[in-house]
Image (tube, rainbow, N blue to C red):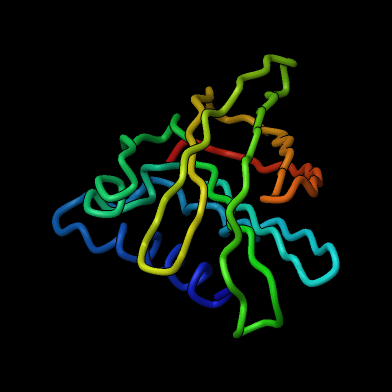
Amino acid sequence: MRHRFVLALSLAIAMAGCGGNAPAPATPAPPAQPEAVSKIGDVTIRATALQTAALTPEVASRYGISRGDRTVMLLVGVRQGPEMQETALPATITATVTNLSGQRQQIAMRELRSGDLLDYVGTAETSLPDTLRFDLTIVREGGASSTMQFTREFYPR
């Protein structure tokens, strides 16, 4: 399952470059930032944040989000079990993002189902360049909760 999460996200980002006649960026894009990972027993939580302009129009449409440099997508997956045999777990994700100026935004997270996969997605707006701190509270079915915090940098494309 982890590989499917990473593969789906990697494919979405890679396909963004296959758009035909788009001009080449004036400056090279910064390297992809790794996903944030938290393990609690046999439960793994993975979170990724990226500018939605990196998504293909098809992927953005499937996720129900608009593409843009200033729009950042947060994607969270909660899985249980050994790697390669993980199952998706239902959860309630509460997320906020804080920029370098201290401005906070609540990120409305919603379920994103694809076959037996269950992930959570939400978006936030930012000015560029900026460093964003993501604060997540994850409450799994049954009441077990955990928190996660990570930062990511975003630049004009």
